[in-house]
Length: 314
Image (tube, rainbow, N blue to C red; front, side, top):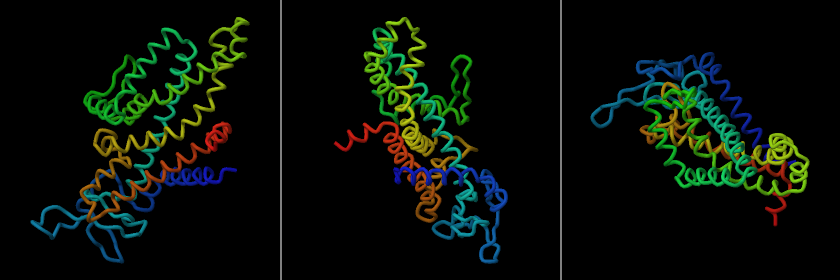
């Protein structure tokens, strides 16, 4: 019934499907490798063979000028970057990376934050006090400053926590960083919800009947907080994608040879005045995807918690 949320879901699905078709576009349509430089490559425009990179004819004649958008899907549809790589092909591959990091980081954040919030809210006492202070410390740091600091440190040697090892160039490194910094955003509201549930009659009845804590959490508490956790997934996905794009733009997120929408924006920064499509295209896709996720998240919230919609109307 929510047409805006349905439209947002369709737009998001379209973006996902198009990005998943990246190998088909690169291999069978553009016939190019978007991760290799093509400084001496050529292409066909209007039946003529032209170089992908043309030596600059302005100023001191230093540098090169990439070919602009040809609007031909088989020949540099959105032009090339300063290394002669097909922008359209990189855009599709970058979308796969950005969406993967966004969705995975969001799910990881909700799972970890949900577990922390449920345990702290139900246990109370010393456990709640210790967990709450840790969350307060993380919450006190500006999000992007904390993410940048962690990225700069971990990009040197990677992450090693006991049996868990994440290489410096792995896509899992920005995922872990983004998930860690946003845990308080999930844990705190779920903790408050569990603290309210703990005093409800059905929870007290379960405790009074001698039911084990694990069963109460699994059968009574979790089903009541699960709708809230589900609502957080699309919203956190949008937030994670924006954070990843910011980190990658600053060169402390996704590392070469992988590409994301943030790295493509950074690649096109020097071409902003001559080949703006290199930067504008990924920026537009980030805006479209995050807007669709936010609208979808609002629709999911209204569907799972109609009382929230009524409260918002009041």
